[in-house]
Length: 174
Image (cartoon, rainbow, N blue to C red; front, side, top):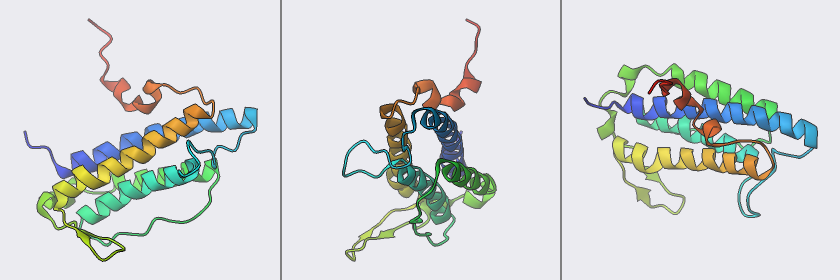
């Protein structure tokens, strides 16, 4: 069976963003009780805070699909958001990703998805390399960093929260 670009991109991004939304929901409840500023919480002084991690996860998911479709990349937004606004951003991103027709990504594994760097160099990649080596790793980095920030801030999360989409695959029988 051939694995489609749509499956590897959209069907990877959407469930993880939905898990991230659920984790943010738990974070909002925790922040309301403990009065912590989760949006600006970070793991290290030189890392982005939770809000930016969520924004970048959404950006890399949507940008990844747009580049695979051959459309120009949109710059990541520079906006401070509340936890509620981050939830809205995730929901809007998921909606746009789900609207991507599987046939629109057929054959895009060979498309030119090269990325120019600010220094003038070019990272040359076809669609498959771009998805495997750029879009998915960046996306997962920001999702797992958001998870780490939430855990480090006292939000009661576990691996089942990070991989919440796996629940539907569990067979309760032996």
